[in-house]
Amino acid sequence: MSAQSGEAVVRLEHSPTGLFVKALGGFGAIGRGGRLLDRDFTTGQVSFSATSSRVDGAGLDYGIVDLGAEFVPMPGLLPDFRISPFLGYHRWDDNPGSYGVFCESSDLPRSDCKLSSTGVLYTSDVKALSYATRWDTLRIGVGASYPIVMRLTVRGEVAWVPYAHFSVSDSHYLRQDADPPLGFGPVPNVFIRGTGQGIAAEAFLDYALTSSFVLGIGGRYWGLSAHDGTVHNRLSTTRNPVTLYDQERYGLLAEAKYAF
Image (cartoon, rainbow, N blue to C red; front, side):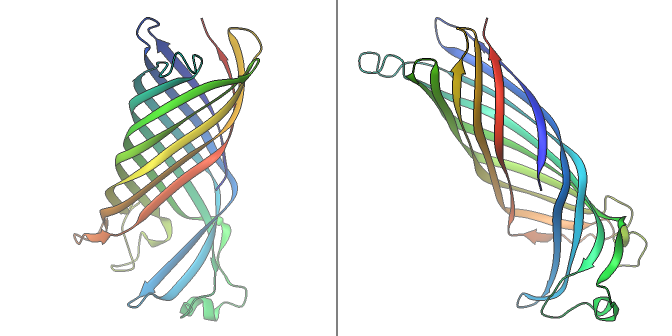
């Protein structure tokens, strides 16, 4: 899924000690053009149902707060090279929705797909599924910056996520009214919870128009993975284990900064 977002960043630094706090908040939208592939399996990982749906817009928001200290590790050798170890918190919410249900190939095709001459079970104006995902993570990392030529500075940071908690509230709109086990009840009707780890990284090239005003361009990556959790639906008390839940997002960024 592709998305666009805008964000604001504030960094407060105590010059004598280099201690700083950085807060980042972003809001955006997931655009059209994504594709959701839904596959179900029997014992032995034999696929008995494979359908796809069109992702069509939803919300995206995130926030980060870091506490750290910036210093010059080699003042005699590299007086302009700075590093910034930090400890922080990251929250990340996605809420994509999908429309239509279209048959895909599988080992054991669905019976309704065998009967459909067009492969369309529900047209693209029918809302099929949405899932609201939230991650709350602890991050430990280090940033660095170094001026490479006049007015140009390269900077970046990498963070390890030793703890990440995720919660997912699925809404299966077409399975609200059926009897169990096909029916899940009113939306949201499937719930996934778990913990995991991950990494985050970004890199920028900055150009100083003045001593206070800087333009930058770069890229960012977030990758989180959970191997421990449970999943259940609204009409069932059975908790099934989650053995893998991955989510990642990456993209390009452009920014303008002013220091005072």
